Image 1: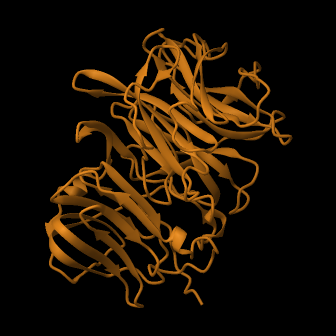
Image 2: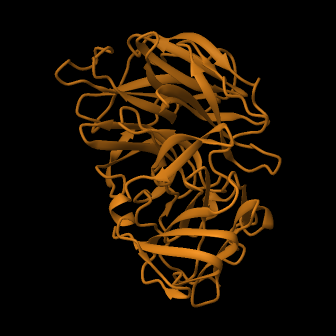
Image 3: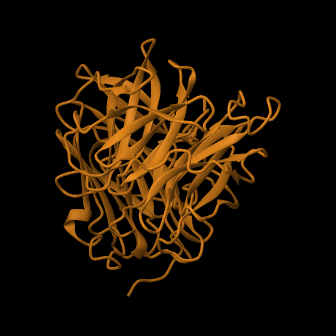
Amino acid sequence: MMKKRDYRPKIHFSPEEGWMNDPNGMVYVDGVYHFFYQKYPYDTSWGPMHWGHATSRDLIHWEHQPIALYPDELGFIFSGSAVYDTQNSSEYGTNENPPIIAIYTSHHKDGLEQQSIAYSNDKGRHFEKSYLNPVIKNPGISDFRDPKAFWNPVRRCWSLVLAAQDRVFFYASQDMKNWEKTGEFGPEGNHVKGVWECPDLFPIEYKGKNVWVLVVSMTKASEDDHCKMQYFLGDFDGEKFLCTYPSDEPRWLDEGFDNYAAVTFQNAKDVLLMGWGMNWQYAAQTPTEGYCGQATLARKLSLTEVDGALTLAAAPAGLEKFRHSSYPIENHTTIRTETFGLKVSGKGDAKICLKNSVGQKLKIYVTDTKITVDRTMAGYKEFSEHFMTEKYSISTAARKKDGAWNLELVFDVSILELFAEDGVDAISTVVYPETPYDRISWKGDLSVELYEIDA
């Protein structure tokens, strides 16, 4: 019988109550990060979707705000995005007080999906829906959703990318109200089958040039049926994405089970990406009290070369002041906090283990060829027939670099985010230890530093 305890993470955002899934409408305005998200406030399972809202100045401490968008006659408020319309191109604000424009999917109970907009003139506290909705009507297909708007530097206008079954569509607009379709990408260039969801398109500067990154979440993304996020690298010609850096294999953004629907903050100085730290296969059964779901940490994205191939790299954002206070620890060290980071460097095979007083263990293995996170014995798991299977217990990432290696692990009560080899691989996984992990041990030639995170 599970011992009940509070599994709510301290630095990973979670709703005060009710259900949450996909991040939505993430935008940075006047020093504040606005985080909207799919929310059902009346139960801890999925229901008619609203947009929840939270704000932060440091990506670690979040303040809950009133619900931003409620369902209406066009349907539930499904996923979408928001932009800070600094030039007031929409004319929903003024030049002195630019509006935030949200664009989202209206999902009718009969399945019809169309795109709608809403605007805020008080920095995201209240939104008014446009009388023009829907601003992008359905072209006669299912799975037509999740618009992610961005500034188009080629046409000097707004563009958006949205999911359309096994591909993405691109649209452009001068005013966020009137949209024209400009192109498509996929399924050519994609190596796995599945419905595409929650796309995002953004540039990252690399060696003086902008490389465009297209991220797509996939409900059944791989041969093992896991929900995963794939990314493509290339160019944006103002009309559509071009995959000019093709790969013979899928590029996965995270090899864990618990990072999905991740998108970036519009208008932020850095490329910052946050996802839903959960998995559709067992999200509604997790043993959390009064709420369900959490976000991942924000990740600062960059590009690097590995064996001559461009690769995304990620680092946890907002933890810099804690990381600077890291200190070396010995094997079998006692841990006195449930929220901490570990910086590990080593060579050769290694095993790292987080343990608690009832014998539960979260294990991380490193070999010459792969990095593995094993939650088989990590804690309570009988709440879900999926969660307790081997298929959903062991995450593996193939190593992209040879020789010596480094890991950064951020653990927060019930969720682990692992960044391997300067962030070119990531593994996110939730666990439910029945008592807190209080010891760390390892085998192998390792140097380990700990930093405590005071939330």
